[in-house]
Length: 102
Image (tube, rainbow, N blue to C red; front, top):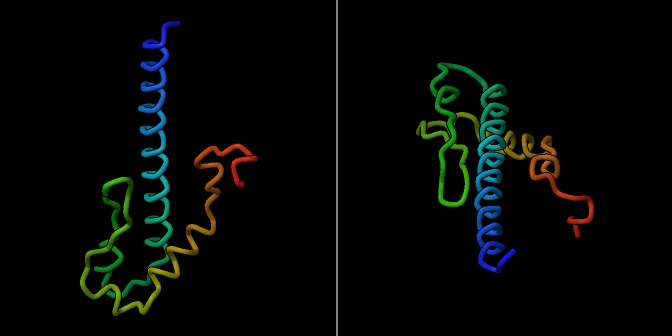
């Protein structure tokens, strides 16, 4: 294999890995949003309906643009966010080998 072919193969591999990582991050964001939304208390349902994900530079974000959300539920969103992440197997999502923790 020529050096140019090897470089092209590596570039293709990196593109594929970037696409796989982005998809995994989107799934993680969607699962986090669902976890929060499923546990969100309902009075009028406006803030519960406001949860969504959006693509940001370099990843995904879980958002709720409803203005009264942070005031009505006093820190619940942040608590649920960290609770959701604690339940995910990030090693499985990112498919990390066992020795990559160090």
